[in-house]
Image 1 (cartoon, rainbow, N blue to C red):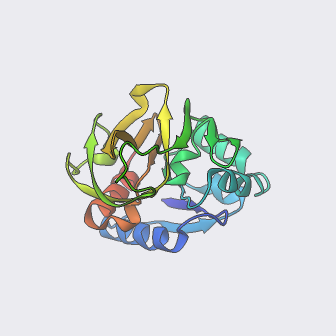
Image 2 (tube, rainbow, N blue to C red; image 1 turned 90 degrees about the horizontal axis):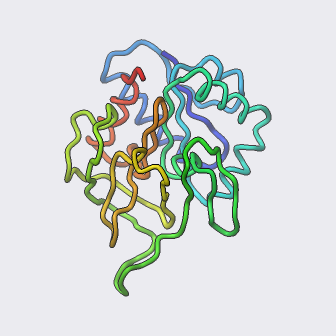
Image 3 (cartoon, rainbow, N blue to C red; image 1 turned 90 degrees about the vertical axis):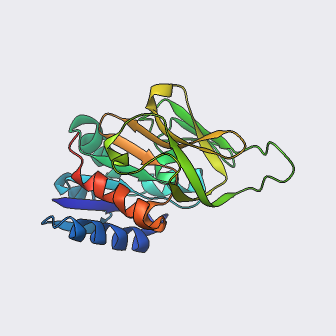
Length: 213
C-alpha cells in the first residue's frame, strides 16, 4: 500500500501525514505514507489524499501549477478508480465551481459548487469553527464505526452545494444542513478535519485506508 498526500502548498500536510501514519500503523498494514508533488508518485499510489486550507481559487491555482498533476489525478482517480479522499478545501475542489473571491473552476468530479455560508441569525459566527456533531444520511464505508451525533472538527466559511443529493453522505447543522461529507464511487470528501478530530477522525482515516471501492 502506498498512500499519497498531494502537497501543493495549501494544506495541513504535517498533521495529515502524522494522522495517516498512525492510522496505518494501528491497522498493521504494510506500506507507506508519502507527501508527493510529482505525477509519477500519483501513478504509483494506491490511495490518494488531497488536503486543503485557504481560499478555493488559491488552492486550485496552486494545484494546477504542479506540472502534469491534474492529468495524473484524472488518470488515477477517474480512469483507474483509485480511492480518493478530499479534506476540507480538498473536498470543495471536487466541485465544478467555487465562488470565493471570484469564480473558479474546480476538478469537476462532482456536480456541485462552493458558496459562502450565509448567517441565518445575528449570533451565527463565520467561519464555522470548532466541534460539531454530524448526521450520517447515507451508509458509506468511510463512516464505519462512526455514528450520528459523533463530534468532528470544522473550520470553514464556504460550503458545498450538490445538485445530485445522492452524493451527500453526511451533514452538519449550522443554522441549516451543511454538507459534511460527500461520496461517489471511488471518491469521498469530508468538510471536517479528520486529522484534528481525535478518535473519530482517526477511525475515518482507518476506514479510508481499508476501503476497496
